[in-house]
Image 1: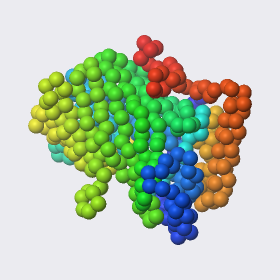
Image 2: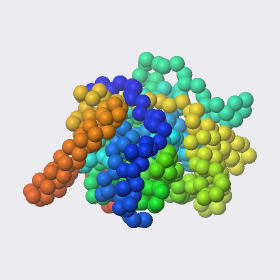
Image 3: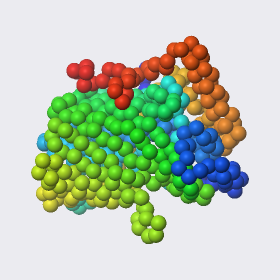
Image 4: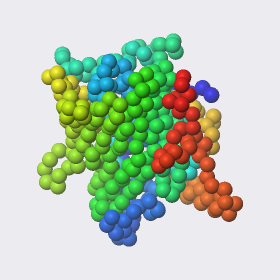
Length: 390
């Protein structure tokens, strides 16, 4: 069914927590203990973000041109460096909006599908700083689909307890795909909430027979009583066993006194020689500076990179468990500022999920995901590119 360019703009414009909302949060906080797991705690509807967590994962692909350019690297070193460049630029668009809000918890069996059409002339490395550090301007739109790469994305909530999301993205023409599973664990930390992203992703570059295994940082919602904001923290790793290159990316949380927010540093290393081939530093939602072993440097401003909008089918053509259609009444109520209405629609979805769970338990029929199958500790798309040998 034909998709069209997404026009939804769900950037949060709220100025923070209102007085009557603050009293609700204070009441909730009074019942929590430090370190407590928040997975089953019902949080107030006014902190919701008007999109599902599954759609948030899709938004990490907002620069598909930088993703596709990874496989064009002439050497294993160059491909690892390009993956790190892409990885560091993915979080700004995925975590859009200055005010921290919480995406909808996907219900079991929920899915999100979309695609991107990427003009071929856009798939080239970010240019180095010379006269300007600005990204390349988007070329004029081309109507000829043969001049575009198609990137397809599917995400599904494959488990409810624990809450596990799986997602898969592929570009057949470039023979590359990524498969990931993430278990979100949230805990109460006083004036903030910490969310661990447990799991990993694997990028497959079929042309080079390389796999890049990567993890994701933790997210923290800070200042939850005033103007909540999101901070990323922790060390993540990116490893390619075949080439022997690896990277460590460190998201630095702000020190209690002084210090900058949103800082990130990264090092790309050739394991057998322990040679550092690239270093990066800056802010994941601002300017990043890359220094290469050649002495060359590059500056990328993540907030100014051109975004390629995803393509999505209209609501009436979506299945009833697809995110936008599933949450449409909650989203509409939130847009209208009708918190009670949003809460009511959200409860209906949760009640339906509970009754379906009881029916499955009674008939002893375990839940079977539609798009993914369990493999070892992880989840894999049922028809992945690396098994179809396209």
